[in-house]
Amino acid sequence: QVHLMESGGGLVQAGGSLRLSCAASGSVFSISGMAWYRQAPGKQREFVATITSGGMTNYADSVKGRFTISRDNAKNTVFLQMNSLKQEDTAVYYCWLGSRGVNYWGQGTQVTVSS
Image (cartoon, rainbow, N blue to C red):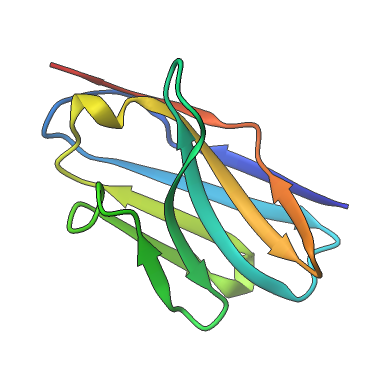
């Protein structure tokens, strides 16, 4: 079993920055990728960014140029640096990990951007 623990969420003013972390523990083998998703109130969960074990990244258009995903393979940890935050970035952010065809999710961390 794999357990994902997110941290780093909080309240920030528009234009500010936050850095999210997600550490994977347990039976972590053959990670195919790690990613961040988010879900705003009343909306479906949406893709934010992903990174492969080889370091290739992909971003949602809405966050390109503002968010950066990175990972520490030795520590099975993925990060999301969020800059120039906007009110529309307010959401619960979820960490995702893919391993051997199984999807694992974290419990989510709240990010609130105020005006």
